[in-house]
Length: 345
Image (cartoon, rainbow, N blue to C red; front, side, top):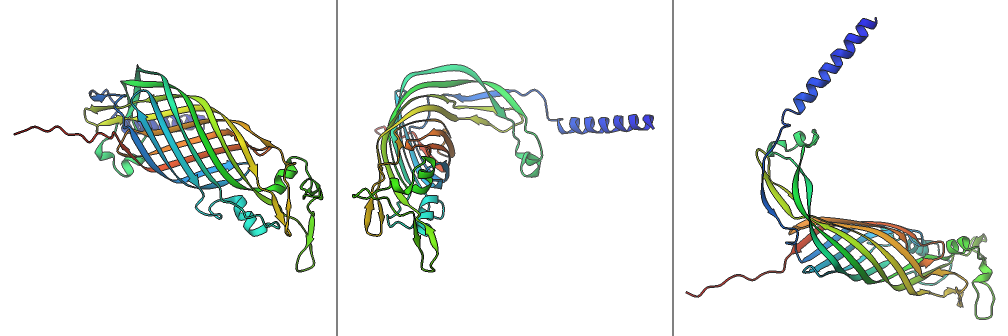
């Protein structure tokens, strides 16, 4: 019995080994020719449409679309502007959707919107020698052949442009807010939401069917602030031609950053209920926050890009955490050089 087991294991092992060898018959040394390696020859302007972003924000979960533009001024600085908002309250602006369906108060809920603009000064912009991994691809790999194999890679020397930057910019955003959730987090009661006479907003009401219901309070939060931080970027722009394989390109532009967020203007609208206005001054807000982020794109005329952020945004105390991702496609890139030489006849 043991002999049969050993023989079976050997047969399976030899079969797997021969299969693996058969799959890797194309594995061998390759030669290449450098076509270009110019990390400073990147497009000056990138404009991209974001068909989807998603944000798990403790104040208001939201998702939708956006647009973003970035401009690079030589090796001195770069500038960026970004706007995003939900497609609608149902896709996806959680608080506005809840307010339109469940609010007892009459304060009109606002849609989430976000605008950011700023620049990065390159206080150190240098070129370093590095290496990059290129995926080896053949036109015969199309379809199932490419999907069913582990791609081979080759490591080639490549220059990398490394940028250390100082960031500064402004952020403006507004959203509807579920005040009941905020009060619960801050251990407040309905008696803390008061009118001009110091009387708290009623905690319950009787609906048309004679049932007692809790008052659902919604308001709006708008902020204007700034961010200051630092970043590190890695730019590559290299192409090589391999023997027996297609040409390969590495033109990635990756940036990671850290910002301190400060919003001196955090405004919460008063609550309107049964013709009276109730103050929300008892609700605490936090003007300070921070974020870690990543942005990536490619030095091409037409491509895509990605990004993400994680941190604490100035907002209601206890409702500041957020995590956001964004995908851009298409992204158009241009070096803004439309001059051509002319000669007299």
